[in-house]
Image (tube, rainbow, N blue to C red):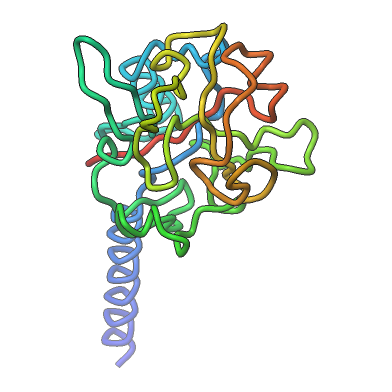
Length: 217
């Protein structure tokens, strides 16, 4: 009887360990806010530079085998069409570093019911980013996007020259903590425009050049 009980206990422990491993794999980090920006304002090296920064931060944090994309829109140029942030990041679901689901799908992400807020929108290291009321406030997150994740089509530049400018211009930002000022203060991806594109301007508006990273696989 004791031997049977021992085998049963071992089986339960093995099953629990397997479930934990599978659950951990399924909920592996696939979303984060960059813990550091480029350090050069909104000059991120374009979309490719921003994507590479996402990948480097994820790898340094111990995440490997995923393809990362920055949640950034870009305006059309003579050589390329406009790009919507929502079209760059796959279909979901997405989880933070703690395995908490922030959105189940691309439509959920761009709905009022997503789970993106100050407690869940963590960095790749699991840190909470300074929000409104903290010192310094760094809640402005670069997106260049509308509330539904698309490029802003009004003829003006909202992406700091497609993320290559650290001087004149402006970048549309969201509030990851879902509070603050602007036309859409509770929007995580389209609250208002930045003061300019330099690091000082981004900081002065209430940010630090951070942006969202999503894994597409």
